[in-house]
Image (cartoon, rainbow, N blue to C red):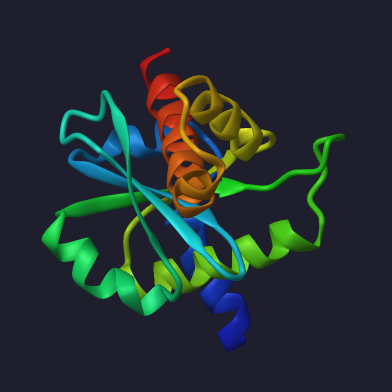
Length: 158
């Protein structure tokens, strides 16, 4: 007989993947997530899954309770913060726990995407557009989530 932990891990496998084609089995709008212990940046795809756009910043998972049904979310794309050598560290473990909570709560598929340097590139892009530093701090996580989500959307089309 399986223990509860083993059963839960088994259930996660059907909802969690690092293969971008995993989400091609579903259709509809995706929610990109840049998870942080203080802020969670969110981005939305269009229903055709061509373009991502920064959406908002939240501070607690519970805040998704209204967003997921209102925006008709059919899956999540979550940034996995790998170390520069490609290995997972402590923060990646925290992200995986967050993904388990997403799956347990919403029963929607979750794609993990390498998010190395997304915040850096998002900040550089905002600098190039003349976004002031104070404003960048307010929207950086949502911008990073949009980059994470767009990376996944582009990978599925390849």
